[in-house]
Image (cartoon, rainbow, N blue to C red; front, side, top):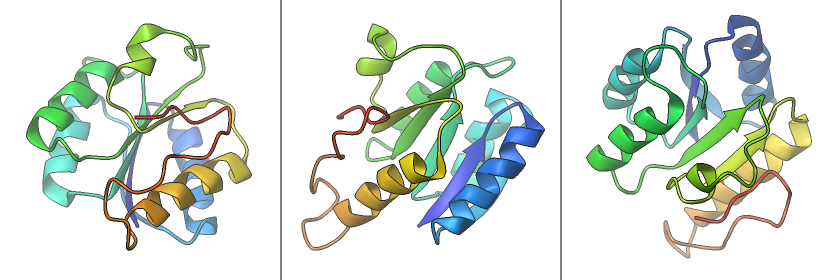
Length: 139
């Protein structure tokens, strides 16, 4: 799958880029400049998946997510945060397909991306639910 990475922490972006490559997916771009740049990049690349940090400068991840989904309701966005957000209603009802609590392990990312990749298989884009890992939030 083609993955867009959006996080204001450049070092974390580099690690995440390596993780995505290790999961055999393509990184189309890494955006660390804030929410407006993420929206522009998403429109330009139309990635299969957006890995999106919640705490971004200028426009936060929830605002970016809302904008992306208004333009493409089938967009697959995985929210990430270093602050505990697991039970926060905004995460649970945001429209994101999954949530990853930072720091997360390569295997957690592999599991979520693998499930999203499988959901594009013969069962179509609304295929199987994400696995019951603590990192996933059912859409």
